[in-house]
Amino acid sequence: MSRILTVAAAQLGPIQRDESRASAVRRMIALMRQAKGHGCDLVVFPEAALTAFFPHWWMEDEAEIDAYFESAMPSNETAPLFAEAQRLEIGFHLGYPELAIEGGRKRRFNTAILVDKSGTIVGKYRKIHLPGHAEHRPDAAYQNLEKRYFETGDLGWPVFEAMGARLGMMICNDRRWPESYRVMGLQGVEMIVLGYNTPKHNPWAPDHDRLGEFHNHLVMQAGAYQNASWVIGAAKAGVEAGVDQLGGSCIIAPSGELVAQAVTEGDELVFARCDLDLGKSYSRSVFNFAMHREPQCYGMIVERKGAVIA
Ligand code: CDV
Image 1 (cartoon, rainbow, N blue to C red):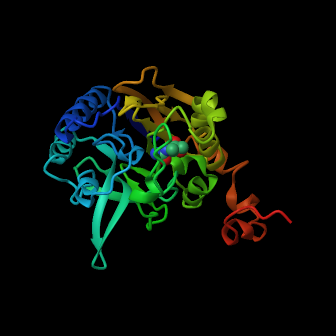
Image 2 (image 1 turned 180 degrees about the horizontal axis):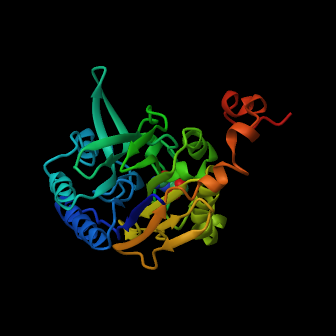
């Protein structure tokens, strides 16, 4: 008997700087209800889904920065999302900036959680690959200050048994790095869910701009195929606080094939019935890791950070 998880990528259109969290949550609840109407078990929301993507601008005031972070989850504003998920009996994935007090100090992470059908948080991930820069670059078309506002995630890439599946998470820039997928592939992941905020224009490499949509799907399709896993990507798309972001939210099978993809840059649901056993054909043959990997030859991957040209 096949193991089907029906999953939706809930793309969000832009959230402007003056839009409240309550309003963003209302939009997410509308998408969650649609997902339930289509028989979905799980709905995947984007990275930092509750506000505009603030790493795109410089801030110095601590209180102003903290205002974009969640110090509790659920919070007063996000509680309705959890309550609706519980009422509908649907799981969800949510990305949000996390403010934690750990070891007596304030820590900020770009975080995502997995919530099961009872509204319980069953998994948490903190983004590891933080793109951009930490210093002020006022002359750029926009800034990319994730290295200023977040610490590198410290939870690794765990895989969670939930909703009858082995589920893993990554966040946005992680999808461009094969290491992110492989760490979960080595734990037998069956479905990787992720959200992204990806500007169409790269001020530091504008020659990539025409390839943005291609690269977006290229990396997720490769990661899915090479790790015999479903990959679900949910964008925050459209022009947000002056930055134009990619759509292309998608569902990718372990074959690497795109099964469904968004066609707008607004709030849009894409969904598919995902057979969790579809990856077995790959993990038992060409990507049978136990049979074909040669880890004794891969040491440099963890020993060396940047390329060294002899
Ligand atoms: N939020 C992101 O991680 N965005 C990056 C951009 C800045 C390159 C991405 O990889 O899509």
